[in-house]
Image 1 (tube, one colour):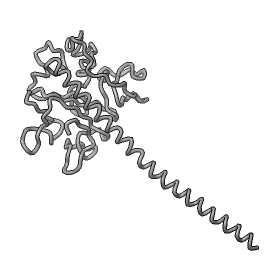
Image 2 (image 1 turned 90 degrees about the vertical axis):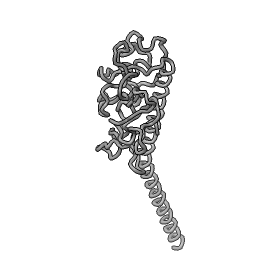
Image 3 (image 1 turned 45 degrees about the vertical axis):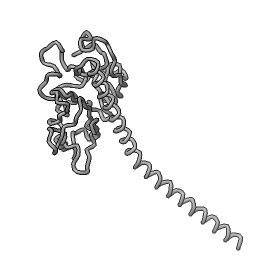
Image 4 (image 1 turned 90 degrees about the horizontal axis):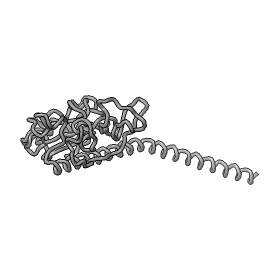
Length: 243
């Protein structure tokens, strides 16, 4: 009888141990499942920041090479980005940009189309920016690269061909100091990056690049998109190169 009781006690103790191990595994799995999306989002932001910085480097290299910014239209016309009264922004239409960013990348990538037709904007045929092909999902939305006809066998709409998309599926915005004041004035895009007064100085840059981030809106407050990058200590999920 004593041996049987001892055997039952041992079995019961082993079952408790098993339940404890299962509980620990469940807790660890729940923590892991919670952490994975945050890790992925952090990786997307890091990728977007790195890409935006490389775009600005390419633009600055073009400026050094040709003493002007990449034009967004035929440079033989009277109106050019270098003589515009206001700083010019190209990018996603949801940003409010009037032109897609492919107008710049035709020149930076040395593609003889658009403003660089017949290599008119890049006669030395320098490749200032290469970049990777975008991932295109089943609905035809591009993410994390250039939306080219060679991207996974995709056939992009004409307005999006050769555009550079962020990891969330929107075109990067690019701004030039077209007014020549050595600042990028974001007055139509961010209310806290405009003008030269102490309350909201435009960054001292010749060019900048930015992404609307996960919420696909400019500024804080999610889908409201208040166009404020910094609200006190709260930062928007946007990615910019001048902060």
